[in-house]
Structure formats: C-alpha cells, structure tokens
Image (cartoon, rainbow, N blue to C red):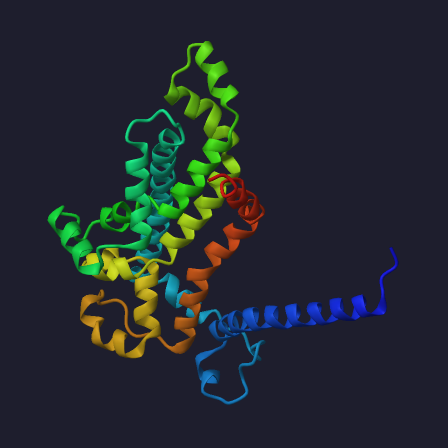
Length: 290
C-alpha cells in the first residue's frame, strides 16, 4: 500500500521526538562519563567539559579501585544482587505454583491476604521493629527477606502457571512424577522467559537498593555500593558521616564521584540488553489470565 505524504510527515515528527527524548536520556550519562575521565585541574575551568573531555585521565578510576571501602561495597552489591535475586525467584515460584491449582484448600483466603498487601502496608516503623525483633539488624538477610516476594510478581507468575496446559501435569503424574518433580523438570524449563524477566526486575531492585541498607545496616563494611555512592555524591551527607567510614577513604574530588556513578551503573547496563527481549514477552505471558 502506497503511503500518503501526511503519513510520512507524521512518522518523521514521531521519530524526531523519539530521538530528542532519547538524547535527553543519554546526554546526562555521557556527561558523567566525560567528567569521570577529565583531570581534576580542568574541572574548575569553564568550557573544558561538554560531552567529550579535552584531555583524558584515568586517575579517578585508579583512585576508586585502590579504595578499600568502595571495592568492598561493590562486592557486597554483587553478592546481594545474586543471592537476593535467586531467593526472590525461588520463593515466588514456590508460592505461585501451588496457588495456581484450584484444588488447594483456603486458596481464596490466601489470595485475598496477598492482594490486600498491594493496597495497605504496615509502614516503615513496623517493618523496622519486625526486622529488629527477628535479629536481622546489620545482616544481609534484612535486605533480602522482607521483600522476598513481590505481590505483582506473584500474580504474574500465578497467572502464567494457570495458563499452562493441564495435560503436562496429567501426563507426568501418569508416569509417576510428583508435584515437585513436575515443577523442577517441566514447569521451570518452559517458564524461563518469565523467570528471566523478573530476575532482571528483582536484580535491578537489589542493585539500586539503598534505603533499606541505611535503616538496617550500621557496619560500613556491609554497605552496598548505592549507600556509599549516596554519601560520596551528597556533600553534606559525606562530611557528616565520614566518621562511620573507613579511615582510608576521604571525600573524593568531583571526578572520583562521577567515576563511582559510572562503576555503579555499568554492571546493570551490561546485563540488561541481553535480557531485554524477555521483558514484553515475559510480562504479557502472565498478565492475560485472571
């Protein structure tokens, strides 16, 4: 079908604004990268930093990678993201799969209690009291267990499991398989798109988490990278909290702060493109059945 000039004009306008919005999203990050590669003596000179530094220096990266506190925070974030994401997916699957069966007694009451939490929550103070009473203060479990299962993720997983053909389970049961074996050998392998989708969602949430760590973690050696980054990028907070940090780290120059932002952002940017194709497919697969 031959397209009309008006259609081409509209497409051109849409592409223009999409490109403009894309530039607005990527320019700040390019500026951060440029600032992290700019020598300190050029930072105060007007016009030396735009999007491409006039002179490149890796002093900020050498400083960051030689600092014990920042490297320890990076290791904590990697461990938190890996362990937390695995635990989130495990608990979500184990909770959603049984409730996808209509013969479970008390199923409606459990579903009501789960969906009730989407509208009402206890708040920060009750959550803090629960974590403290369970002895999880200053432990990694305080950053993982309270948010082990997301209600939204549970609903999507449950709807996806309900949409799978019942003949898969029936044929496996005829061969003598139990529910656990069916879940491990049949359900999980064919559910990898939705698992990969929510693994990224959970992983990004753990990597960017800082508020829970500021509430529950007092030992600076157990801070994730986002907490340290917040203190380094917030001048007043860094000056006020330097006594809580190790003696080998001082308030870095602007280039070192920008370098820390790049280091904290790049891991997610490296993982996300490989799993992006699962996002739309994975969420839609579990959102069409009530």
